Amino acid sequence: MPLRVGEKDFQTRVNNGLDDAFMRGTVRSAQEQLRTRKQASSEELGDWEAWRTLGEEIRTHTLEHLDYYLEQLSDKVAERGGHVYFAKTAEEGNAYVRDVARQKEAKKIVKSKSMVTEEMSLNDALEDDGLEIVETDLGEYILQVDDHDPPSHIVAPSLHKNRSQIKDVFADKKGYGDSDDANDITRFVRGELREEFLDADIGITGCNFAVAESGSISLVTNEGNADLVTALPKTQISVMSMERIVPTWEELDVMVSLLCRSAVGQKLTSYITALTGPKGEGEIDGPEDFHLVIVDNGRSDILGTQFQSALHCIRCAACVNVCPVYRHVGGHAYGSIYNGPIGAVLTPLLDGYEDNKELPYASSLCAACTEACPVKIPLHEHLIAHRQIITEKEKLGPMPEKWAMKMFGTGVSAPKLYRLASKQAHRVMRPWTKGSSISNGPGPLKAWTRFRDLPAPAGERFRDWFAKRRRSSSDE
Image (tube, rainbow, N blue to C red):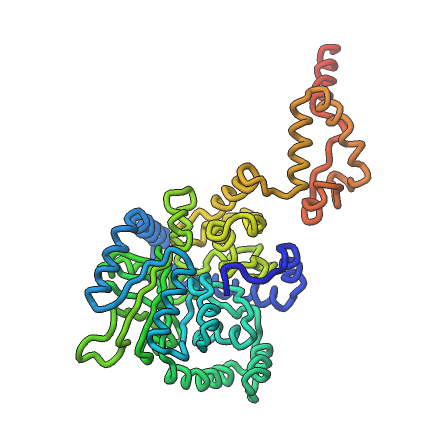
């Protein structure tokens, strides 16, 4: 599945979300639960703002010295007998993994949840080679079985489905015949996946954070599937985007504390796993062969720009869980595997403005996302900056907005025209005026007034009123 998902245009995706009452109810409920849990767990830490500041400082320092820490990580992995590959593009990363699979004569691969492999369309590339790919995260497995339904949330990818829908998916595709009770469904999936783990030739994981000082890969999960992915197959491949790194275990401790609380409101998730290269002599668990693929795929172009802090993201989805726009339209409306406010910032940076120019406008700019971010990414400011670039540099702004701005520019630059227009505005807008506001306005105003009130022009201009007042004062 590539970075962008689906072929429908933005407005169609939004309308589909608005028309899906079940999805909206599910998202609202999930947001409230996750936000409440996050608040409770973060309060236990004490000064949450101080933790956020520390997280921001760690991410800023790491990105400003990214070349040093990546080289250190690479050296440490190699010292432990692992292989490191730096992929400039998604295609290079996919080609490397495909080559490893060919060398191993692999037939089946088990995967744990990984956003960067989704971004690379790694599954599609491997399936083109005839390999069987099995997602082992429960949410990802549900979507894979359901004909590769795209994810709708960064942390909870199948958030848009209820138990009954999931039961129907497994009944239709896997012959499941039990109830829609979550325990029954989970027990069934566990049985299905157990055989897949045992048969797999290669395990592929993502990476929440790599630790530069030791060459370790850390995985933060609640299901334990990632541990089986790394322990049972003889070959392990971990794929990480280049910014997902911390200098030492001390910084990892801080980032994991922020991630678990911000993502699911837990002090720690059920499994915090650290892996350091292939298993050594006398070790029982672990792969015999270990590969680390470090993916750039456009991130180098973000470094040094006004958007660099977007790379601080630790994929907790805290911004998604407070976003009022996401609550109404759902994750599929963004048309990207990265949805919500961080998706609206990241997707245009990684995939360009042409096909993603609407995303920065999918925000009320209330700044709830910025306040929720555990590493203080100024998300709403990035969205404003995107809008400025789209309008002024890329010239991709909405056509009605272009016409409105052009008309406004012409009007205010010609005094006579401005006086005439301002005098006639109240009369011209009268058919669309109700009380003191305009509703369902014409032309460029239509999109705005469809959802918001627009104050109607006053019947008397301020200049006219002021002139009358002065004349009245002088007469007295």
